[in-house]
Image 1 (cartoon, rainbow, N blue to C red):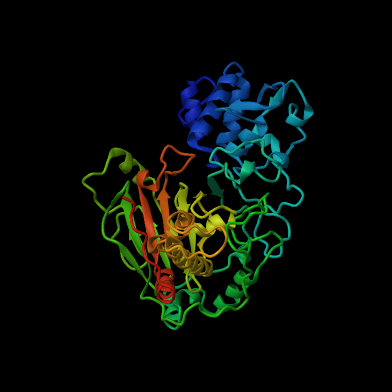
Image 2: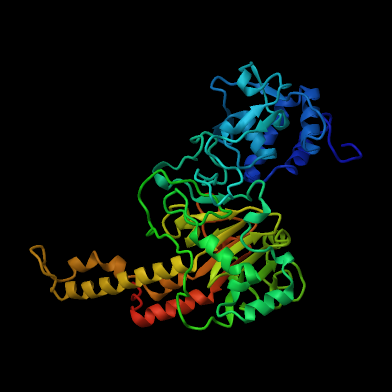
Length: 510
């Protein structure tokens, strides 16, 4: 390898692949990206000038002119990588330039002699020989609150199907996709960010405005909070059950069934409860695999923004440092993962108790969020949400949570009463037989307990490593480092709901 550490075509394939891997954009899993790059480098090993052109283009981010980088066109025009087929120029453009690219958004530059659309025997896959164009009906910024077109969400697997519909990834039956991706928005205009970023807000202003509010977090932006709150709350788009319009982007679902009730938000909303806000707006517990490490960290309501990072500074107030926590049972794999937490995440409490997450780390974080499940049209707890570096996304909505806990508590209470009546043989109607048989059909609803409702008030988030059907780890408790966030205002509301309609915890099965 050369002195500058940039490889040439004369270097070993492994060195070239390693260098090119360092420039990938993160939209694909490491395994898939490595397979795709290895495949390309091997194809180009006998065409040294083209391999050098690829290395130059990628390592300089297109700053220097480069030649066509070609591979042979297949019969159907698609390339198979790791068991999936996709158009080759799209695969490599996603890897090195635009992780959220749709296949109909590429246009070749004039000097490209072997562009995919020219139908030559060879296809140019140099990402810098293509430009991204805006598809009809797609707003690449995804941030204009007056937009009426669909947004460009990635509702896709970690290694998504390159050949799904042009504007909506494939989700056969609505359930084949389990990891929903949330990349940072492209070209984010400053005015669209609803609240000031933390580093622009003087600490004195944050604490002063917080202490004078009935619900401290709403005043994070001082005087601008009320106008911003109304803008966030009142926005409704033409897309069914998508009421947020913020930095997470979800396409409309292709099926009419909703798992969640649909509600439009009012412009000005009174507090859900007149109870004073709790002293701490959340508590954060840190886990390694299935073991909690260190003490639970409580965040005062006077600190609406808290950072959770991997550094070793003392924790306190608005910062929870995981690097300082020791664990005698820590494995080498956990140690390696912890090294990549870096700047971590920022959690921000807005309004009466909505929560937003900003990923500050160089690696994605993975979130379990019933709110994002609803926004994606999924069943509660049905998906894991991958939040990319620099993304800023809403992960919890207090009003939606309150509605859901009321609904589930009422359902459980009614089902328990009906179940008792069924066991006693008091269900009227020609089909009534009494005894235990009719009660079995009610057992699922009656089985909702306090713990099920508490889950609505909890966020879980893993660093670096994901879990679920798309990963070897099936549970967050199998990931090396993760946090559990208990939201105190939501738990306070749950306590009120349970006082008005108490439900008994289901008895464990023998």
